[in-house]
Length: 183
Image (cartoon, rainbow, N blue to C red; front, top):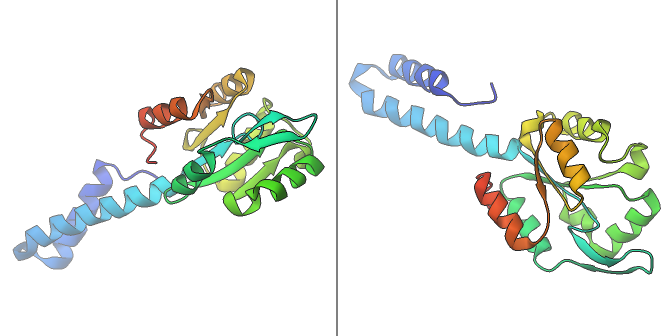
């Protein structure tokens, strides 16, 4: 069961009522409430937040290698990792991504790096989003995808993902609030 709904809450309440007896009705309610809180916390950790590399995590001229980390993004990812699985989803070729990963420490920062150059499929193709679903055993609506390219964002939305077009850190934080993503 992925969602802790009212039916599940009633089942926990009934089970605790049976096990604890009628005289412990308040304790039964407390057990049911605690189960709901624990489940809510666990279901947040199910959500995968996938960030694009170039244009979101980093900015600059990729041809001259004058690339720098976008201010504030590292701290955002660290905060998000407390409640969510956070991955890098990039269209970089494998060699370039290894260099960027080493330079910016992405291997330690993200829970995983999904590199199209290693998979042989690029955004906006459905297969790369299907790969994320399978790798993390999630449904499309349990993925929040952040990219600066409108085509990739629209494609992700058409496949059922929650997708945000990155324009600024402030705009991204506003979208996270709208989606009830805890930062």
